[in-house]
Length: 407
Ligand SMILES: Cc1cc2nc3c(=O)[nH]c(=O)nc-3n(C[C@H](O)[C@H](O)[C@H](O)COP(=O)(O)OP(=O)(O)OC[C@H]3O[C@@H](n4cnc5c(N)ncnc54)[C@H](O)[C@@H]3O)c2cc1C
Image (tube, rainbow, N blue to C red):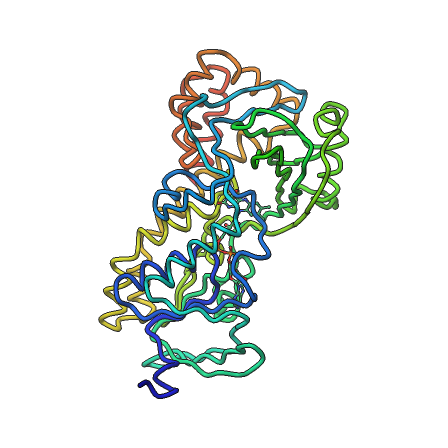
């Protein structure tokens, strides 16, 4: 039988049992690393702030197909003046829409099946890093508990306690997302809709996502500097009351609403002695879509073997973790390039310029190209191909060259 202090010693303690913490705990536990997840809420997957899009490779990693509410084959993308560009093909799934609560619970259940422990209603109060371990004070269901671990990992989301406590900096961009769940709308079940326009989605876009049984998620996200004093909630009202679109939303009956941050821009040094952060805590979400689940899963996949080796050898100083986290450099580069192209093609142009881009996109040969090269997970190759092959975009190519050079 374990003594109390042995029971409170783990090789790894993960703060946050969201999808990334849960996935990482599964990978660690299934390789024999003793792991504890600390979650501040009383249940997994609540509250959630997410459109629920999970791309097929991420879904394959966890096999939680029973959490899919709707598979999506394409996007109906609308320009500010209403030009429609359909991207996708019926029968070819581009992404899945999941019930986030069931998805997160499924991911965390996999971790527990693999041997990880979970403490609900628990949060860290302080942490001290010594040469041999990390000593953490946890408030667990109102009581103070001391635990020790070899490595502390923060998978505690956009406002990460771990990142702030260990002064690891801030993600480059912190978008604000707003979303409602509605009933009463109809439309193509397996296509999502995207809307652009400065009035309601300054710099980025709004979305309508089918979630099965005539329910939809309507949302938008924006960079704070583009909002010009407006709230994202006001943007939402401007979308559903917009002269071009109010008919589309006239039957929508709101049943829930939520607002949340989307951190895009991996922090420069997501590690220090015996501490690291991952997922939203590290700023992993995509600057082009705001998706954080797929990138977080890829981040884990990229480091897991080396991480487990370092844990087993107890090589967990900052320089060791720098070597473990080396693949993040290419993720950061990819994010920076995607952000640069996003700014050039979507965030900076005026509504008139966006309309002229949409006119080009709508030509059959360009649509063909988009459908062939386009990959929402890797938007840079498509952006570059468009700049190279579409004559009207060539004038942007020089600016793109500079932006990519300095991204
Ligand atoms: C409006 C909106 C729409 C989005 N849509 C999508 C989408 O369609 N697809 C997609 O992939 N991504 C989407 N995202 C982003 C996505 O939600 C995140 O990238 C994803 O949830 C990140 O997972 P995570 O595990 O890193 O963090 P989180 O999901 O935030 O999980 C962190 C966990 O840590 C817990 N926690 C936090 N602090 C503490 C603490 N101090 N102590 C203990 N526990 C703590 C939290 O309770 C939570 O359970 C969206 C975001 C927003 C705001």
